[in-house]
Image (tube, rainbow over all chains, first blue to last red; front, side, top):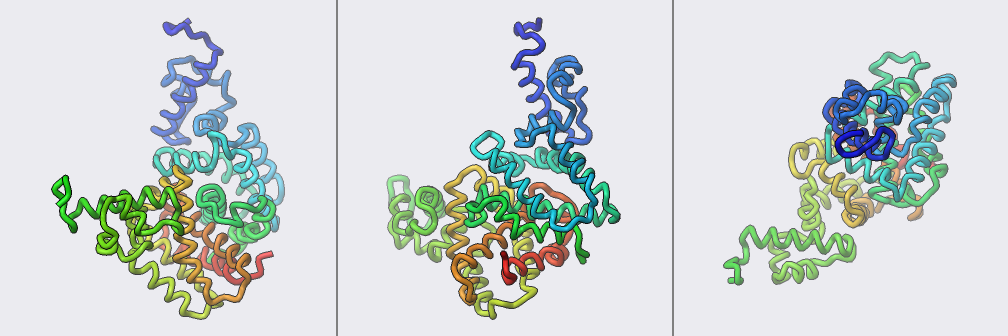
Amino acid sequence: VSPGGRRPGNLDTRDDIIQAAKRVFAANGYEKASLRAVARDAGVDASLVHHYFDGKSDLFVAAMSLPFDPRQVNAESHDVAGEAFHVNARGARIVEGFLGMWDRAEGTGSSFASCAGAMAASPAVADAMREFVSERIWSVQTAGNTDDPETSQRRSSMVASQLMGLAFTRYILRVPPVSTDTPAQIAAWAGPTIDRYRLDPLL
Amino acid sequence: VSPGGRRPGNLDTRDDIIQAAKRVFAANGYEKASLRAVARDAGVDASLVHHYFDGKSDLFVAAMSLPFDPRQVNAESHDVAGEAFHVNARGARIVEGFLGMWDRAEGTGSSFASCAGAMAASPAVADAMREFVSERIWSVQTAGNTDDPETSQRRSSMVASQLMGLAFTRYILRVPPVSTDTPAQIAAWAGPTIDRYRLDPLL
């Protein structure tokens, strides 16, 4: 039992780990951060971090209050990678899934406005977020394609620009009908844009 | 001379008016705010507001620390409206102009991150911004088109989603190459998206 009377396994310990993770991710970014460094910063044994969190991406999702189900971040990426990469009309599915996820997070501490505000206020948070998305999602999603890495990166960044912009317009600027229609309706207009960035010659 | 020893025409007065304008725009939005209400809130004569600011849009740009040259907000809108509406390939020009403007504002108090952060933190600020853009820019830009109002609004909101997303990706998330290329290079990929939202059948 620690000086504060805490025991392994209580809520304070989990929260201490999350607070430590915020500091470590902000200082080192996502790639370079380790669960060991988080445990050291929190003053707990590394095994305790593994007890609460299913790896680094799980801990990151919790530390950044992201609305992802940590167990789905990998599952969905693998699902997408499992299909042939060059499937047209997947853009609409990507838009619908992305907005559906943020719709469900509205009114919680994981809303798009709160996540975007945290990134706007802190370049370190934005850097960690970019590395996380890059490593956990894009690298898996583009695993099946035959583009050179530079073109892949260009496609991913353009896809990100349309997705982030839809969220910004829907949840922050709240311009109708982007702010009022269903994710499926928005996907019908924006899906072809995503597919163009994913598949067409860009220049 | 006021109790504080101020005279009409000094910097304090101008700043008082800007602070009052922030309160009035946040409380009433852009459309319903009046220069008279701002003068009342600042405790100055309405003529003094007109002395410092060339109308409501000029005052709004100052109050929101926007990187627009107030005198250009109208001029450029009229310029665009003056051309035939259905000109293809204007999308690239819109993207290049939009990013060029925010590029010049980087490192100042009018950076995209600071404006986006203010909108993310306050729905009232975001509402006023949406009304401002809607009334001063979109309504003029779409003046020459023959779409019904609902379709016009849909086109404008989709254009906004791609523009805001490019800025978010370039200045906040900083994903290369969107964060590293020139506005003209980005315009080459994103321009056709803007033109599709402006001109093509959407559904």
